[in-house]
Image (tube, rainbow, N blue to C red; front, side):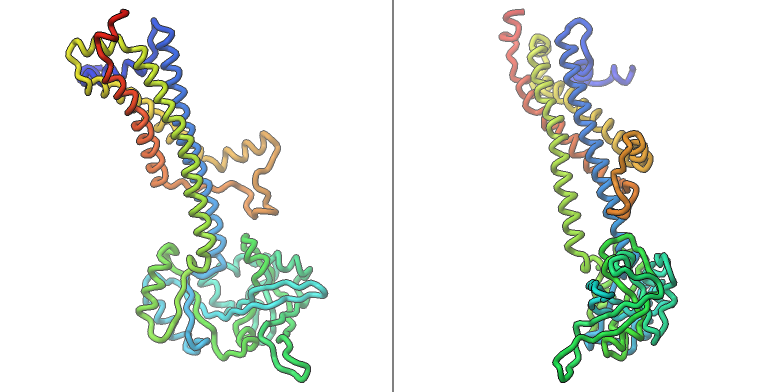
Length: 421
């Protein structure tokens, strides 16, 4: 209480106006409207925090699943193959950000089984080195990734690709490459039969339905090259991939082409960022509607308190002090609503893995079907910069909403306000 006594009178009056008056029904109604505005701001802030956290969680989940198959950085030789790939791998490892390297060769073809045809990306790898750059070996649900042996023409398929082709372990599939070979009958596609020795599940439909692995030696024979097409790298921090790719481009000898994972999926990440920005704008409008409810609240307060304003003016209060009183009142409502919203939003975002299953059990529904999304729980990734940004926007909108009513209060003329009192 001693702290309150030392506050300027504008703060004391502003704080008093935020509380409901005991003698006036109108005061109680005004304070009720203030509570509604505060609750609206709080719900808007909480909704924005939760929605952005869930979107961040989905983005992180999908990115992690993509990068369990994709390399962080890929290096290609302009000559079309990399015969000295061991030396290039050693050069790449000199960069402290690189923690794994593996050679590869990749092509597109058509997998055929009976009368079923499916396009696929076929990647040739060394099974003993592939775990350094991807998690496919761990994701092999049936069979063994290490069953890829040179000259055996074995293949590991994505689970959806195997399901579409109706193949299981030990059965044969035919790979037809677009690169044809001339014959007396014309140009025919290059064809080779493979034995299915493994089925993996990355949890990302793009890879599970259109990706297959063969041994690097078999891929080189199919592509008619005498060395790997390039190197795949894994980094300590995947977010530094563009920066590290440029460093490798500048430091490694030879005519090399270097690309990072963000360029491979540029359209997807751009779409996600656009969606997040649009959701931020849309949900900010909810906060804006609640914040500008303060305008009506303060206008009603100014109308009700005209006699008080006139008395304060006759006692020597300046128009600036009057304006400050109502700005303090509106700002307090906005700040309290923001703090309530931040607390509620953070609490929900951090416990969404408990809240969503409870709601699903209560209503008897499942929000995310694993058969469709490969994710059975709603992910959440709370990022404090987003929380601070949302809180700052809410406070600024609440402050802006106080300007006009406060300016109007400062223009009240004492003589006219007290004429009918």
